Amino acid sequence: MNQSSRHVVIGLLLALLASARAAQSPPRNADVSARVQTSEAALQVRDEFLHAWNGYKKYAWGHDELRPLSKTYHDWYGVSLYMTPVDALDTMILMGLDDEAAKTKDLIIKNLSFDQDIYVKNFEITIRLLGGLLSSYQLSGDQRLLSLADDLGTRLLPAFRSPTGMPYMYVNLKTGAVRETKSNPAEIGTLLLEFGSLSKLTGKPIYYEKAKRALVELYNRRSPSGLVGSGIDVETGKWTDPESHISGGIDSYYEYLLKGWLLLHDEDCNRMWNSSLAALNKYLAEETTSGLWYGPVNMNTGERTGHFSGALDAFFPGELALAGDLGRARRSEESFYKVWTHFGVEPEEFNYSTMKIAYDGYELRPEIIESAYYLHQFTQDPHYVQMGRSFFDSLIKYCRTEAGYASLSSIEKKTQKDEMPSFFLAETLKYLYLLFSPSPKLDLNQMVFNTEAHPIRRNW
Ligand code: DMJ
Image (cartoon, rainbow, N blue to C red):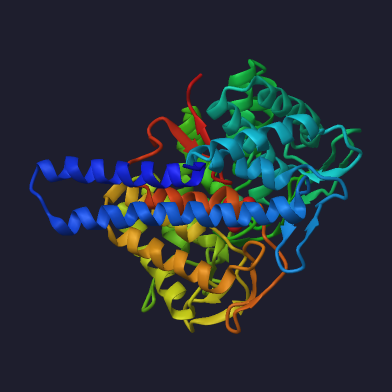
């Protein structure tokens, strides 16, 4: 029996065992068959993961990302930083793809070098590579992954050498030179989980200190209403764009305030999260005929600047669920789901008053699935599994290609574009798999997902 069939059989046995256990109490045939179907769906997700991964192996092996239409590859900075393998490794481990995981770990350990004369985005490299290396280290116990993470962390540290302590957007991995003073809350405030964990795991406090100071400096510049804007200069500390929202450029700043508390038990994060959440509920939340939304406002006046939301904003129901506000979480996820079913897939940006697309395209993003996963974890409501099924069906219908999966340049015309971002394997398929898995694979009391869905365990 090959590895794949072995896992299919194990998965089905697990589902049947779970069903049998459930059947000891009041037997309900519908429950049993729903569980078996759910387990089969998890195995289908794993097959689709393998389809995309095999495309990467065939056409892009050793490079950052697969180009799924032209069947070529793309390296973000001219040389490869093994973005897709590092991002995908912990998904393989969680899916029980042991042989693939072993080969991928070898590839990374033998070839990945951060001693490169390139300017990289501190935020992207932190969430994808630092986060990926740390979670795979914790899941595999391989010290060499921690050494790579430590080396990367050291090379990223010069980014924090601004007068305010908020990091420059780009840092050169070899020389430590920095670039780009204009940044945003997401790029400044989405570092603490990875840098904080690196400190805990290496015993070097500097990582935690730098990322924490950046986060606090940003929070301290909030407006009297408690909101942050979309753009800030890290040298002057002045806002360059006062628009406040929960979309790309701000989103994961809020996520890390909450998760900094959950993972690191940092009391300041708890305090900053609670006051920020109150401001978001007071100023951004809007009840409309299409549901509950968190739309943009001016950070200083609180006045509404539009009725926009998008695929990235759909992380927020998950945060609300994690924070214990299941009422708002459910209503907000339902609003996003309405948009998904309206268009067949989710637009990058839309106007929730007119239901018109504001920015066309779908980047294979995970957020709406991530939120369904959290809601299912906390409510056990099968509705979220059904939701997951419709996300998965759309992905297969519109985004599957011969070589993998492709983003959509237009969701109206359902036209594909030549990109398969690494987060598709790190996040989108991982959350779908976990949503469909019959038994909980990860205990949310013991671990926290970073914003790239890399699970980090609080085992220090
Ligand atoms: C990922 O890189 C992360 O989830 C990030 O926080 C937002 N953008 C993508 C996924 O959409």
